[in-house]
Image (cartoon, rainbow, N blue to C red; front, side, top):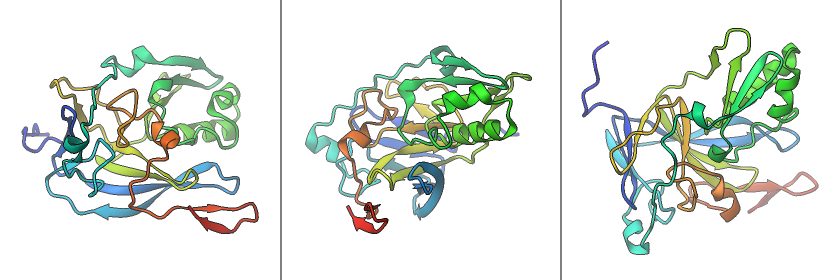
Length: 248
């Protein structure tokens, strides 16, 4: 396979106190977290595809009036987006949970609060019962739906990593249950380069902060949920106690 030229490499560059510079014809879409009957995160729904060029800039401060794209609002508001995340490989950061047929690596600091690890019993409990085929299947499902890559499973017998194969793309996360907008879901092993020029570990799935308040920049740490960040691209609804929709 021929090497990609620098101009065609799929890359996201974190600019100093500015936006994410995206290059390499990376598709951009909207991904909505959809809950099950119990109101727990269960699936992803693709809602929209955005028109982009081969390169574009995505808002990182959360203040742009043309979200998801940058309109230079970071300059007006004096955005301070200092990168604080470690460049250590995931494996060196991870806490290991040894289950019956599965081993779970967990880096809590990367949690994007998508909550796919909750349905049917939290994943940390499920791996302890993963000799049961149905429990194992659910645990794998929960880990595969985690957008941030916080949770990575290994097959205990073979030692092989269980990881989804995702085409290179970026998704804008929208959380219908919480009524807020989430991070950028970066999929398919796209290079993410810090403002200093040093790349972060290339991974199949990570989430980047776009509300501007993460304490683990450039990565999401779930802060969008606490500040109820909304990008204005969707109209959220919630269910009242009688199961009827209410505008938020």
